[in-house]
Image (cartoon, rainbow, N blue to C red; front, side, top):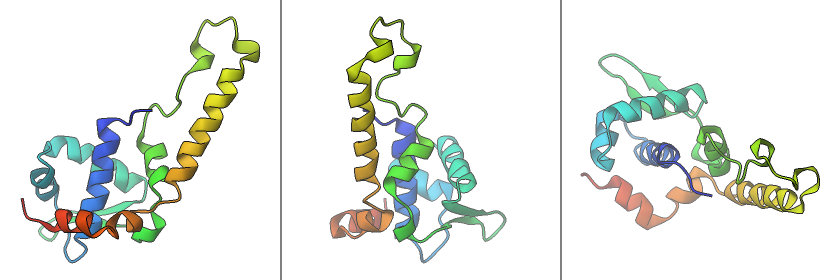
Length: 141
């Protein structure tokens, strides 16, 4: 399974905002740090706000903050809510003679469940507890 660039950027935004709790982050700040498009980040941040992971503030003192504690943000949940295509293989939309009783379909489903189970064992706090990752996020671009 390959995650989309959108999901990758979603995780980057969460990591960046979580590592800069002392101030409200801005889209421009995050875009410059990761060398990303501000417009693309607007969509990512908007969705993270709708999903309840971020709180956004407008105006002079505007910016972005985490809406949850880092220990409450499970990586698997974030990925499952932001990835458009999370199934490993779409058997239902295939013209396959094995579909009524294919054993591969069940194995792929179990593998996908294991994938998300493992990801949900890790939170944003776990990722930030790695000193190298945290220090890289704190460097000014």
